[in-house]
Length: 184
Image (cartoon, rainbow, N blue to C red; front, side, top):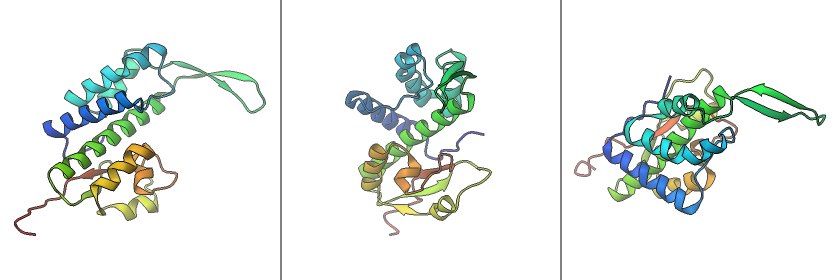
């Protein structure tokens, strides 16, 4: 089951493209270690297409289906021996979800800053089997977007940016609040 990103509209998608272009220019765009050489070359284009027209599920399926990720991996074991394992199907899905969500969250913070919205709100964008206590405690939290944007860009993920330790699949994301400046 994919993410339900409630503010994934045309404007947020455009801000996601701008965030991706900024990361490309700065050399900070995150690449999965499972991408092939061709995959690394084509990933930015595939990511852009996912951002503009699709979602993280499409991104993962396209990376796998187009042969942009290794189907067999070479792993070195602790004893120094080398083994070959079947490719990283779950890893690619988790990577696509994590990166799409991170870029979405960055874009949402930018949108809140530009629109003078004082906070973004943490919400569960996906139901997970075993959400950690730290994740559950973050739901509903209101966070100032400037500092969160800085953390998202520096720490490279929503869980670290929110201060959730050791949890890569919290299912959490951000949404804009139902905020009416005239009401208060």
